Image (cartoon, rainbow over all chains, first blue to last red):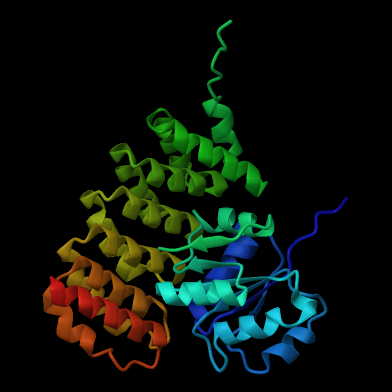
Length: 136
Length: 195
């Protein structure tokens, strides 16, 4: 049986972060190239227009025009994305922001800068259904 | 009857670091880190090969084990590694190792590298907290593209190094367009004012 690769979307306004994410997913983990977006404009329409429901959405929590908290809340209200993992990516987070992310239905958090030494294991855990909170 | 403890086959684990299967590499790396000092020389040998997944995984494992014998081989890899992912692993591992002998190599890489490798060079310079990095980091900050994420990482590293002389320079970025930069300026200023 052919291995099914996860279909990933990465939404981050930082070009370098998007490049690094793509490198991790494609070069390190051997997955197909992710969908890379630099903002959340018309985000629900754009996600709905994808051929495949994303397995996983990496989302910068401070992105514009709609931040990660808002987008997470919207997605969790749409049954189509019930199985989609939403992982926040951030350079830094406060305790109250973390609590808010969990309450809104975020499945985890990965800290920037993303590292080859930790990302594959975190990603595997996420795919296995674990919540991952990589706080540094 | 006593159970005989099974010692893992180190050479088999080393070979598995080159596997095309990600999980096999991760499992092997985890076990080699647990073996700690016993695994260091075989890992250094793999690192010296200088190419392929195995070398990058060896760098990662050596950083986590933290044995000072890995410092010079990791410096060599940072300087000469053929793949960016390999040089990134070496840069990260040198930060984990915390050995000040890596400073010159990291400072040279700060000027030479871009992208993923530079990001981790900056991160490791912040971890080492050696004030020799302050002026090179400031120069890199001013030279960075205005939209590059390396800027907030440099500001973060300067905050971690804790040299209060850079406070005014960092404050120049207080109203930066990038929210990451503004957030890290706030944190760095708080640290520097306590220094």
